[in-house]
Image (cartoon, rainbow over all chains, first blue to last red; front, side, top):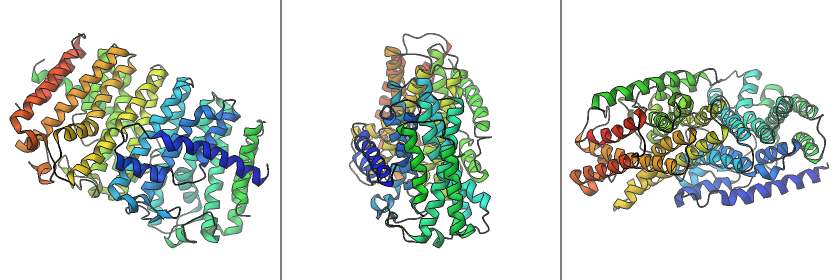
Length: 298
Length: 298
C-alpha cells in the first residue's frame, strides 16, 4: 500500500470509531458535567490507532472488524483515560494536550480524575456488549487480556516506573525498554491480541499477533521519542524537546537518533515477519501500517 | 440469626476474602512501590460487605459462594480504589482512613492515583478468571453489570454529584437519595446482582436480588449518616460530625435522626420482603444482615 492509501484507510476506520465514540456515552445516566469532561477528551481527535488495530486484527483472523467496534471503542476509552490521568498536576502536570487545554485545566482536577475513572470503567461496559454477537468465552478472554494489559503489571505499572525514572538519573536501556513495553506497549499489544481472540484465534495465531503488537508498540515509542527531539507537525501543542526538558531519559538521549532509527526498523521487520502466514487486505494493511510508523521519521 | 451469629458469619466470610486478597496481586509483574501502595489500602481491614454479598447471593441461587471468590475480590478492589480516589486532595482531601494515614498521605498523590487506577483495572482481570469454572456468558453479564454500576452512570457519577452538592446549598431529599443510590448504592446492588447472575439466575430472581441490594444500600447510607452524627466506635479515625463539618447535606440534616431511622427500617423491610421466596442458610443470612445494618443505630 502507498502512504496515501494507508492514510486513507486509517482515517476511514478512525471515522467509524469516532462516530461510535460520539454516541456511546449517551443514555447511560451520566451527570451532564461529567459527561462533558469525558467527551472533551474522548472526542479530541487522534489517530485512533488502538481501535483500528483491534478491528483489523479481528479481520485478519476472519471476523468482520465492525463486529468488534464496541470493544475497540472501549480500548480508546482506556487510552483516553490514561492521557487524562497522566496530564494531572501530580503526574506529568501538562497544561496542553493536542493543542488544547488538558482535561484538568478545563474542568478542574476533581472532575478530570473522575472523567478518567469513568472512561476506564465504561470501557469494560462497552467491551461486554459485544457478547451479543461474539461467543461469550472469547469476550471474557479478550476483556481479561485487556484488563491485565491496562493494569498495574502493564500500562498503570509503566506510568509508575516512568514517574520513578523521571525523578532519578542513570536509567539504563533495558529499564527504558521495559518501562515503555508496559506504559505504551501493553495496550497496543492487547489491542491486536484481543481482536484476534474475539475472532476465535488461538495458539500460534494469537502468539503472532502478540509479537506484531509488541513490536509496533516498541517502534511507535522510539519514533515518538525521535519526533520529540526533531519536531513534527503532528505533535500539535507539544514543544520540541519537551520530554528531554522534563529530564526524561529517551531513546535518542541514550543511543543517538541514527541508532534509535535502526532499532525502530528492526522492530518493524520483526512485526512484519510475524504476519507472513496471513494474506488479504487486513493483513496487508497491518504490514504497511508497521512500516508507515517508522517512515514518519526517515 | 442472633447478632452474634451474624457477626461470626460475616467475619468468617471476610477472612476467606482477605486471605484471597492478600495473595491475588502477587506474581502479576506489578512494580514493588505500586504493589505496596495498592495492598496498603486493600488489606487495611473493613467488613468486606460487598464480596460477602456477592458470594452469599450466589449461594442463595444455588452456586457455592467460594466458586465466585475471585469475582467477589474484584468488587472489593473496586470499592478500595473508590476510597483512595475519594480521599485525594482534589476530592474530599481526607488525611485519615480507618484510623491510618490515607493512601496519598502515605505514598504521595501520584502513586495514590495510580494505586486506585491499578485496583480498578485488576478488578476486571480478577473477575474474568472465574470463567475457568463458571459459564462464560454468565461471567460477561456479571462483569458488564459491575462496570455499569461502578462507572459514570453509577459510582463515579455519584461521586461527581457529591462534589457538586458539597459546593452548593439547598440539596433536596430526592437529590440526596439519587446521589447516594449512585455513589454507594450501585456497587452494593451490583454485588448482589452479579452473584445471582454468576449462579445462572435470571428474570425475577435477578430482579429480587437487585431490589434487595438497592434497599440495603440505601439503608446502609442512612445509617452511616446517623453514625456520623451520633458517633460510633466502628468509625475509627473519622471524627463525629465530619460530613456535616464539610458542609455536606445528610439524611439527619434534612429529616432529623428519628425520621432517618424510620426510612432506613422501611428500606430493610423492603429488602427482606423481596427475599421471601428463598429459604436456606444463605437467604437467612441475607435477611438477618439487612436488619443488622439498621440495628447498629437503634
